[in-house]
Image (cartoon, rainbow, N blue to C red; front, side, top):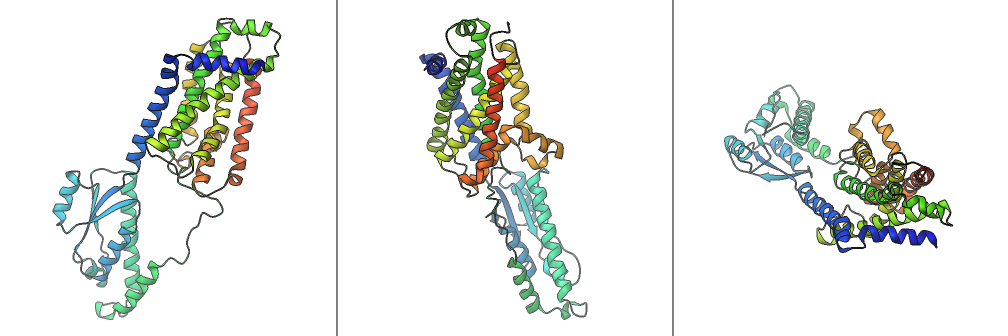
Length: 383
């Protein structure tokens, strides 16, 4: 089969020598795996919140318990003064500190709004969220006191009824379930998967670069004079790029899963399958770009102008929901978005039937772009 011989020759050029195997396959895979392992370990570290409830009343206890329920933070109870809590934050022993004053319940029962104090070094998204949680919980407790209040004074408040109301509020009446949409955590926190997708596209463009060299050095022109169909030549180049990418992908995933211990919540085989579909689309993107430029130098420049921006607007580095509406619609034309969605649904407990649409779209990307690349990536253009 002529296509197979062309694919094997491309593989030999990429990793046929010891230097090629180390520089083109092992080192990129090792660097990517180490980056993923490093970032995943930092990502898994929870924010430390030191909490001191100096209030002996029931409202301070309920406010402290509502903070403990926040699973995003590592809540540590401290019996320190307010000043000592500040020192913990300043010294870096805690990312933030919460102090519930001793008169918290007393003020609430007397009809005065009371709040806990939050200490932080700078303003970030997580501590802004924590401040909103504290304010919301304090408002809820104050509203509950006013609801139970009788004649408007402390004596008119039935603490038994107030306790019963607070306990009833603590039990959720409606719970959210991701049963139908099968949502996971990847879409809201895509950094690790996005990094893998970006590196895959960069690695694929490297193998397509050898095809560009064939066109520059007129090797491709000699291939077209042989008794071969243009389809065989194009398919052989694409097959070789896919096989090189698959080898790199297996090495990366093996190091990630079995050496560095990072797993996005789906089995090794499922992850490999989704990324294979994405790899096919990435080969299509690289071949289409290669057909539009004259030499490998231009290919490298165009890749930098395509791969990084497309990764940014497709939700590889931050949640897509924070982008403007027009950019979210533009992300539909990038294969990265559909790969992230497929991995997210599998991570949320979905099956392959739940990601059929995403895989089909990746195949469509590959079919259209590979067809385009096979037409324009021909030796009729000189460097």
